[in-house]
Image (cartoon, rainbow, N blue to C red):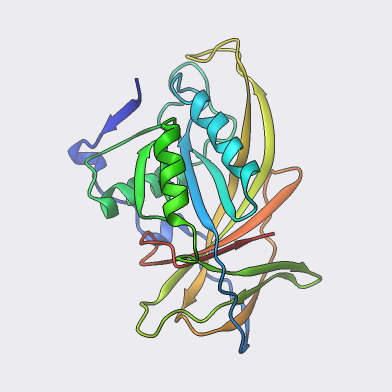
Length: 250
């Protein structure tokens, strides 16, 4: 049975972009380029918790999706609202809770729950539903999301942004730092006694700018966090939580 958290009147307010992106003062280096990379990825976000007894099958499924295809950018965003169940999720982050609630508003949902998958910022479903996950990933393939080329350089992280279709709205750029794999022994709570491997758990999420959709390159400072072997991804979404327009990872 999936865990649900109904929106109470005092919880309905969706946290603004300023809270979700605390490092808005970043001033990226910008230069114009002429080429766009067309074959894009599929972005799969899993909202999960170590304190959720329904989540381990979804955690396993996300790992399978991540390993299946290099074009799938999959990551786990660990929410905070189950941390009171006798176990504090070691990867729980407030920005994950805020991001999930913002998605709920965008997608017209009255509740948040775990496990929940969101594909390309457009479709949500119970994260352990293997058949639906496979259908949504297959439907999201084929270049609907344009590819961002992301590289690590001496100056930080350099992104080659493709040209979006004419008339595209301005995009919020999100930079993620995550741990590719982490195995956790859970000593109390609903998953007491289990040892679970988590895939691409998000450590930091920063709003690093607004993009007008023109082809260009930008360089960002490398975000710092707790991940021991960090990997990075960059996601572009209109209004912060719309349908994902472009994405890339190292």
